[in-house]
Image (cartoon, rainbow, N blue to C red; front, top):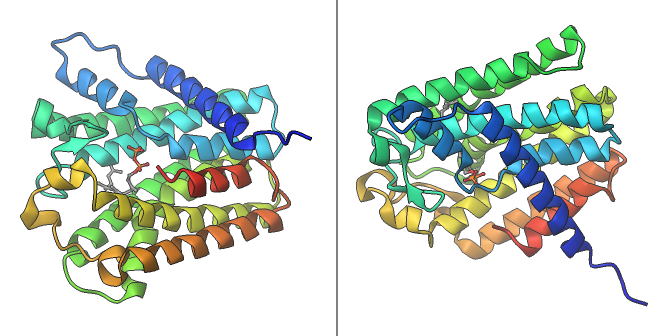
Length: 299
Ligand code: GRG
């Protein structure tokens, strides 16, 4: 008996969702006449080939919670808002005052191509656009929409990405114990992961217990994802392009314990993520396949 090729099928699902996200992003992003550097940077930076993990998390959660086409359509808008916040954060993260990177998604970083002024202004414009999209989400009641906007705002602001980034910048340069590194990783990488699944849970009107387990799942996946990112960073052109003064010697789990132990930690996070899905009652759905997909094909 031929077993279904689940990875192949799931790979198709992922490709289709990415294409849908990119099409919708293309509709939301400003059309860019060549002389409009801000619009061009917003468009190119956001549509550049990233993995679209945060949108995938939102949309696959909706699928696992058996949502219909109307909810999926609202989810696509929210997925775009999340990806725009993520892109905005990458514009800033790559700047000389932060990680000082030359390359992002295989292309010159925004400040290298367009200037630092455009990177800052483009980032602010992307954030503004993201909140406008979230506030305009169609076909949901006003109270749910308010909660969705608040969720995105909390994931982004002084208690979310901004806090995580500041921790990373200020603490990441000195030697730290494992717990301190894990704390920074949780602050900087998990907020948009948890916002993705919690947005889907809100759209689906999921139970408190299901939402709690989805949150646990996204946190564990985020932690695994950051370790994968650190592992890949050691080899990637991005790292080679980075200013040695800024980013070399950053205290990551990989730097502290070595790649083997980091891989062990990744496995542990992924196992805990899987358990959360089982506890949420969706242990054999799309999100579970996403975990397998990550193990088999980390990046
Ligand atoms: C909210 C605009 C704004 C800024 C907040 C700069 C900043 C402050 C936060 C950046 C936080 C940051 C860079 C976290 C790292 C997260 C991470 C793993 C990035 C790489 O994400 P991938 O692998 O990238 O999903 P792709 O390119 O695939 O999308």
